[in-house]
Structures are given as structure tokens and as C-alpha cells.
Image (cartoon, rainbow, N blue to C red):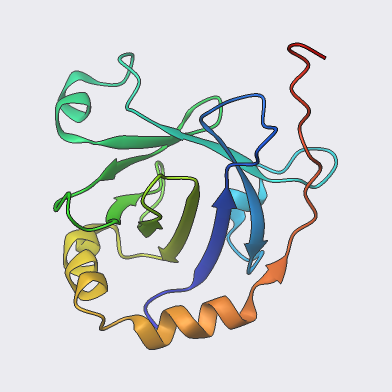
Length: 156
């Protein structure tokens, strides 16, 4: 298999941040994400526009970013009519493929370890449906995550 790990993140309705996405299902197998868990074992990331503090070259090319105190990945969306994107995990040789829903509240991330240099070609395979069997297999292996609701204290 080319794809090795799967993580599904959602924006919780009572989240303190519009950019925060909490993990609700995963294969719990990718150390780069597993190391981001908090003391309660919860995993969340921030998904949004590329921060201006990022390197100028990346800022001009990337469409979105995944962060958590630091840049995890710059996200590239080659075709805006597709809800499919790609990137790589900073400091690794790993590529990621990303599927988002139309309002970006749900983000599914598929990791392809060691495939950083093939990320665009993997995206083409992703768009063409060539990875659908692998995606189904990873989703079936995913474990449901326990998520503590974030209560927004404004107006409470």
C-alpha cells in the first residue's frame, strides 16, 4: 500500500477557534501526529490560511496550512473545483493527501510515508480514484477518538 495512515478531523460546534479541528477517528499509527496529542490524549490541529510569517515563497504558492504552534504542512490545492489537496509533513519525507468537505469543517488526511517527492503524482492518483481501495482499507482500520467538547465561554 502507498497510503499508510489515516486521520479524520472535524470542527466541533462549540470550539474556541474557527481554525481548530479535533481528531475523531484515526489509525493512531503516525508518530508525527501522535506526538501532538495533549495530556488527555486528544489530538487537534489548526487548519486555515497560510500565516504571513511563513516563508515568502511558500506563502505565495500554498493555499492553506496545518499548524499547531508550528507549521506542520503547507497545503496545495491544484484544482479549486476539487475538494482534494496535497502537502508534506515538515521535517519528514512523508506526503499527505487531504480531502475536505465543502465548508472545510471535516478534513481527512491520508499519509504516504516516504513519498514527499511524489506528492503531486499521488494527488493525481487521488483525484483519479486510483487510491480508493487503500482509502477504504485505512478508514476501516480507524479507531474512533474520544473528544472533549470545547465550551466557548463568550456570553456564558
